[in-house]
Length: 479
Image 1 (tube, rainbow, N blue to C red):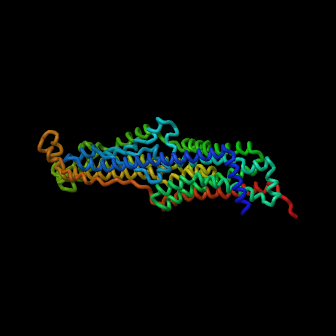
Image 2: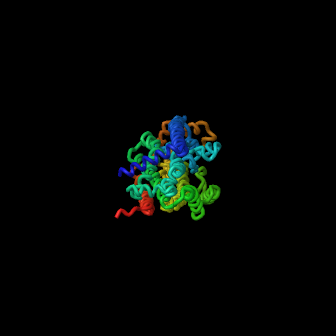
Image 3: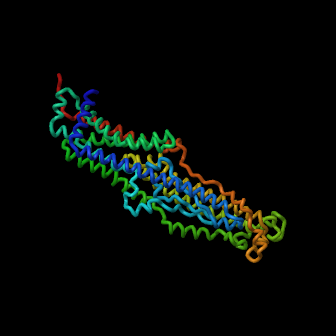
């Protein structure tokens, strides 16, 4: 063990002597710190803004004066998705999916105001999150630092001197690996500080950091393993760069493109056209005389034992509004569920390739841990729709019960009727507070276990590859 530590210390001295390695490590550390600070400031600002706007939207809705309930159905309401604590480190899909939804009757609007739209003006690296730095750039820094840790000894034949002095080849590899692990831990320090500062739940924050620790160790072992098998430093660097390009840039992009090809998704325009066609079977909720509601009218007249809708104890137009909204929502939910199922299938397709790329495995697990993955976004959409349907149907219920049919049909022609169709503003309290949060930590931990196991498997695999490569180094017969 002493020889391993000595070799690691010698490697650190070598890095300090070669100014380039030290400068690269320092620049990487500065970049990481800047990304953590910049992203945390931006996310904190967005969180404060969205939470404030959510409260304001709820207060604005509830503070409306006395109106006809259907006016409030079209007045609508906004819901905002506030960032999770760990979104500071990994924004995940949040910058691309939209953060605000306008809720109104008869429609399911999509999420809008994607932060990436504003960031596009600053170029592709405008949102250089800590997660992206650690996933993509830190492995490259480790490669620059460690591509020649073992192959350099072989080129200069100093490995034979070390073995002759009684140090085993595996100890040489272990010492070099320990030195590079030290660099990885140094680079992980800002992430550790970030998880402590922003991790609202200790278990999920710990798991988040451990994921990146394992990922960094995987790259350390890939680098030292390749360095033991490749005899020349130039070839070692070239091999590692090719591996980095394939695993971190080329393969993820190919897999995502393949997912879009294998599991195609209809465009928004195509979906909207299909929805319009499907909704033709639903009656117009604004027209109580629409033939689609003839059976509903007949059933109500029979139930209450009257001959015409004017004699009903409830407002038939409010009943129609409820029935039409329910039928319309069923159709909209079917198309929404189909779209989300399609997107989920694409996500699962990509995750099926985690075993061939630690980058894909870490990216999936990191977003799950941070609560910024696609599945969490889908839950936001479903909860927003549940809020929309609840307050719209509550308003339609008021339309049914708090005014007469005669007043309702005459309100545009008679001032007194119009006044009687305005319900008390206290009724707007039917709107429930909307406060979207990520899944509990237990659920997120269970969903990321598969990716964590794969990362750990990569760790074991390249430990074995490194040890086998080390045993190929010159050994001395002490017999």
